[in-house]
Image (tube, rainbow, N blue to C red):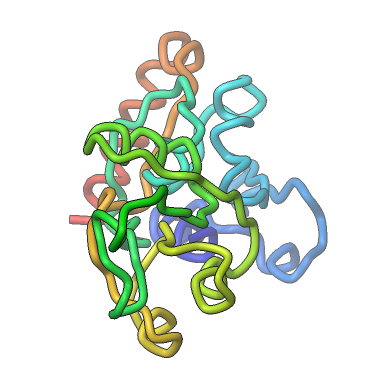
Length: 199
């Protein structure tokens, strides 16, 4: 997602200076000096923006939903499209296990999954996994998984199929609430430029 975001800013004339492109620096200035980019993990972007360390950033809608960040997200940037889905092996029943019992669900998205299953009236045991979630049902750790799916190839390669959709996600432009109020014109101008670039 970061590479696509940097390409978008490059198209607006705010790309990273060539001498910094391969740098291991953790604060990267734009070539025109108007921005500083912080190459942080996707899950951390809302933390930096909500705290005010960063005025704005790019984060997946899935990340925003999972962390419940108090930020504005005024624009869908239309890249990084994927689906947060429930998947299971073809022979595993969904939404109710054969013979009853509480289904075990492996996921990185425990908060989102908890809300999703509660809204459907399903009681599940959530197991937080931070690595490859697809292995969990293969080794008997879980009945189902909740994970991001782009093409479905990893699922298919591991004998899993999508059985339900939790939410659709894509990259969002997010903005710190206080910064938005204090620098409204700058934010509105940039959002307009971003909208024009993705149209």
